[in-house]
Image (tube, rainbow, N blue to C red; front, side):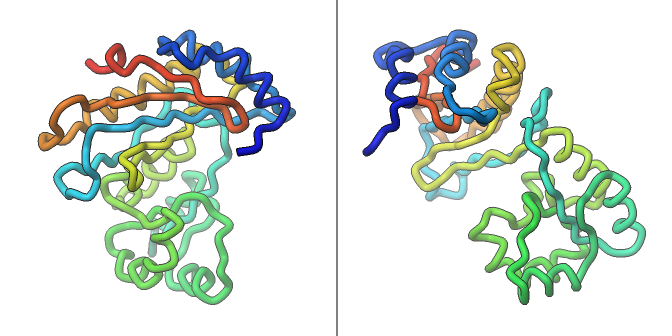
Length: 231
């Protein structure tokens, strides 16, 4: 794999054989960030579960105390008073059938998160094949199917993120920007880790946290000691 000059220079700052504690890790990530833009910092957490089994799924949502540093565009499927409630709470778009038609006919995707009230899931379900592959399908576990659209939108705008396993049993989550600094990144990271540890399935056997790494968009990964992160 081709690596750019900046990446190679950054990689020299990371000790590949070492398992860092969180404060050291974020300090290293920030020092290794060489891009000309404010890079996103992501956590990559491999879990000792098998996502093929329904009783070993790990999925949920958590509000990061310092937000993600990204402006999130929210679309809400609702009707009646909930449409105005969603817009008042900061939703970028709110409505019903007309939004579903726009997505279907115009391939319109100028939004990052979809929220729906339970009574709108019939309409949303009709475009599930379009939303699903993009990870945009509303889900009760993530708090994106909710009768309280005001709270759902406010939480997302405040920095709520969804975490879920991919096919290789790894969770990938943004936890902020390089400009946040060590303390804010660490606070966000600890909040995410606490949620994932709390979500441990009863069916999970053996070591739950297999490996944990953090990295900026263009930078090398920094490995943390998973044994020191579990409660």
